[in-house]
Amino acid sequence: MQEDKFFFEEPPRFRSILLFGPPGSGKGTLGKFLSSAGNHYHLSSGDIFRGLSPESPAGKVFHKYAGKGKLVPDEITIQIWHHFVGGLIATNSYFPHEQFLLLDGVPRTLKQAELIDPYIDLQQIIVLEMPNIEGLINRLKRRAMIERRLDDFDEDVLKTRMQVYQDETVKLLKHYPQEQISTFNADQTPLDVLRDVLVKLSYLLTHSRE
Ligand code: ADP
Image (cartoon, rainbow, N blue to C red; front, side, top):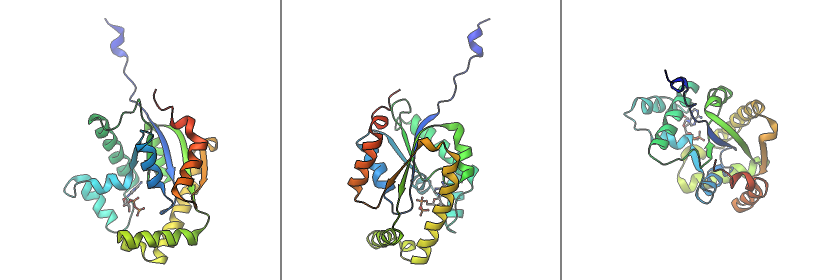
């Protein structure tokens, strides 16, 4: 009897960098740069959800919650996320042995962090900090005007979203080893933020091949 048939390959853990930052802090811009110039895979949960066909079971769940401005329940979110990453690998869009996964928007709650832990091999957490809330609100309003994002016009709604982000992120960051967290001042031009990130993390970012 061949013994090796009892050995199973461990499912790969996705080597991941988590991006945190309040709405308008420039997470998307940073993620795009690191994915295009750095050859990592930038995955935003908002993009996953918005890309679901509204007719699909997952798409129906998303529209039910997002339509009311609510978060999708944690278990379903991580299930959809995991399924989506599997699809990216199957279609040769993301190469887990060569690229880091830059996760933007997930995990968003402590429960999601716990559920996602078995699937990821955490490399680093990047936190974009916006100490100047007024500046952030002005940025978002400008973006709302250009992109016609009506929900971002209302200052009270914006302030609530910031508060929700703040509360959740404080809890989330406590879940992770503090030495894996790097905080950057996002109240600068995108290039300045990028420079700071590269100065601190260029070694990691240029050594993603296994
Ligand atoms: P916003 O920053 O306006 O919330 P996102 O693009 O991050 O926009 O997400 C859009 C919608 O997708 C959210 O309102 C929510 O319904 C859903 N969503 C995105 N990420 C998550 C997540 N990690 N957990 C639960 N729901 C999520």
